[in-house]
Image 1 (cartoon, helix red, strand yellow):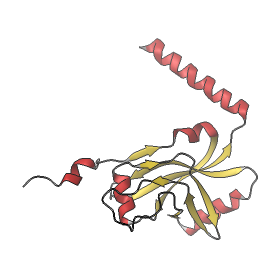
Image 2 (cartoon, helix red, strand yellow):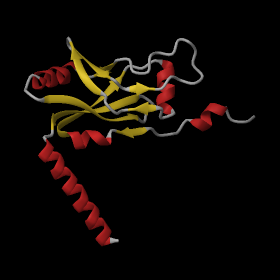
Image 3 (cartoon, one colour):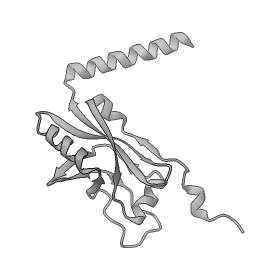
Length: 157
């Protein structure tokens, strides 16, 4: 028999990076967290129909939620498809949550989403970072470093 039509569309590995995060923020610490998804959402993630831009994490009580992550509705889903930008709960150990929540009380810190990926067991995970917003002169410095690295790579080729 032929293969199922859906198998062809789903890539084996999913590793979606938020390139803007390292430019916008100075990363202080990182964690990998599980994410609570519905069945149709994980199917959309496996098809890489995800937009990380403008997403961030927010504490609500003692729980951490991923806000503004866009997961496109699954094309073969029904009217039960969840909203594309709904808030999604992150799964972390209580000790890690408490530590980051205490550090969030410090001025100017945020939790940014660095990447979304599927682990070796097939579970959707996110890499999040405790970060500090960069000032404009820091961003200019990042641009200079990036351009310098690009020039050095050109010289090596």
